[in-house]
Length: 202
Length: 314
Image (cartoon, rainbow over all chains, first blue to last red):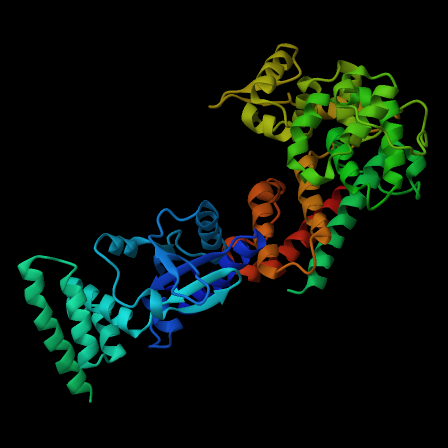
């Protein structure tokens, strides 16, 4: 029995993804979506944490034996939009359980290595691409710079246990995302916070 | 839920629908009654819904073609060609193309109103039924009023209001029940009001009801045996049949249907026809309380509840 007062679980979101893929398959449609956030972290096995939605950062077209072609997801195709709403109804989820809020990242650029290190998970004819460590660390650092050391993104970043080299590459990319001096001034502080927390954890 | 369960849902829905259509055809054509002492249906027969449902179930029971051909020849004049067209979209599209064949039989029998809808008729053993209609019993109230006053919204509105026995309802509610356009129902209600068949309740919006004692009096007057017959119930047979036939159609889907796809179709049906349960006072499981295909067992319970309720009305 569905209890709507309970928070959405990863299990519920995975069931929703399976249902969405089944719907698309029944309509003869195929979609490749790249997702980030909690679902991606879990699917890639980086760590398990609760999450309330599926963040779509890109749609993709597979290239045989090559790096898939990624593009901005908005607007989502009508069949996919209809499917998202149908699954929301059928699983008692918010209508925006799958959303493209994070796709605004396309305005300033995707992190390095995003397309080349995707791990695809199949749900019917819905293929969910999950970024590798490098892209994930970059995105998490950037999000943590925006929301601070107490944010879920900083927690995710720490759980990823980035190496110094990975942190430096992520910081170099993050620096391209915002030209303001204040933002740039935050980067060394954030890196110092990550390093100190990782040292404490050791 | 397995494919077997899907089959069980669809076969159960088909069985309930078939039981209902045969019980109703038995009212019109007593030669079809296997058991002369079978209970008399207590709900008002809806001829357009009965014909559409029978056309949809024709593949399950070929004998329905015979009885449809008989009815087309003997009773099509009591049917509304406009209403059957407006009800048709509520039924699964792939199951109603035979309306053209019914039109062909009716047209062949001299009812020119069906001409525009005629398609090539199929050969059937028509004529298995009385040559003259004899409408009896509370279930035929609507048909008898149409026979007396002509086919329009008026006899249908009157039959519904009689079945409601003094309960005042606004024209929108009446229109939904009788499946006529709201404007037609408003005009019909005004005319029936002028004729003293209805009275107006002092409510907002305006509501109509039968005067005290009118419903029982009318049914007594129409009784061929002078009996005090019970008032017939009003059931929205178009929606009930559309619901059952949609579920019955799941049997024909390709291969073993995915449980989730089945459950989402079940939710669609509930969204479309859920008001039937509310109107009938039936407490059925709320799909919003179940996640994904967990709704299927609850939907099966819904079908059982509907089936029991229909059995009680036949």
